[in-house]
Image 1 (tube, rainbow, N blue to C red):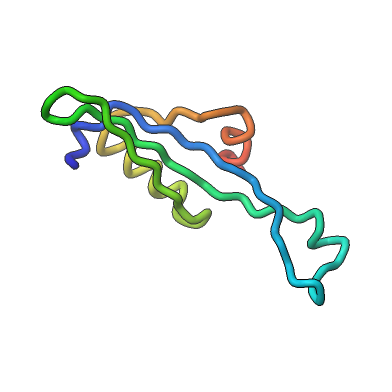
Image 2: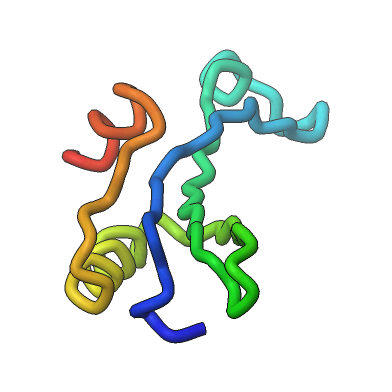
Length: 90
């Protein structure tokens, strides 16, 4: 898909508790969370129908990916919620 076809893209995340084996369970791991980072792409196909894709990206490549998408599409990232915006700024 050409970058020019992308109408908008969003960043959001979903936190899920890590599940460890009984041997590794400690108070620390019970309360730790693993954050997953998602970028949602929205565009219209050649027939004008709305399309979308959700990509899970690693924490280490999140910022570079967003920067490339902003540069190539000419659009700014939309944050799905305040929590995503706060964690992106870290």
